[in-house]
Image (cartoon, rainbow, N blue to C red; front, side, top):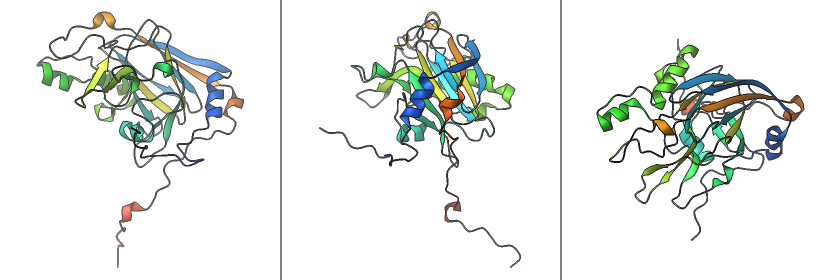
Length: 278
């Protein structure tokens, strides 16, 4: 049986119609490394990526899930909108997909340029990688499920990471779960599987705007050990760091590229502003 067509479809030359030659050239062309660091296990870090640069996330030692937040560095009210990205792109993203920002901005924050797990596809249980279906683990749900407190969930890691940039817990938002393998089971419930990444696998994206990024190395590590339920255990031994690399592509690779404009709509939702003094 044929599956239904996607609800949101690109028109030729529209915002969903990605110039693949441009982004392939950026992925494959000459570049200069301008920043590199590792995020230790069960921690988080925030960093800036200038527009027109490339950021690569690397599983340097072994499989590890990372929870990624993205903001417009110049106006953090604009940030990753996971649910709209699921509709405009896919629930699990890969090369040439874009991560979109919230209203009233609605524009691509990044375009995925390279993904060594792009060939993973759909496994026998319906799992796919680089997940937008779920969100970050957090101490509130953990307390609700277990009655215990733990301060190094991804939500908490991200909160600590963004504090030096003037942001708070209220700015942390739904994430892209990089390297995470997930799906929906026969009961239409969310499941997580062991991360399929190997040492040296990477997920890379191009910054369409000046960005502030934050990443948590999930305390569940590669998620091969259940975090909740009767089989739950301590996954400390399956936790690994994630490497971050930021590159400046050669200038000629950006010929024809322009930062995306914010959404064109300006009509106040049909509301009429009051006229004072009449």
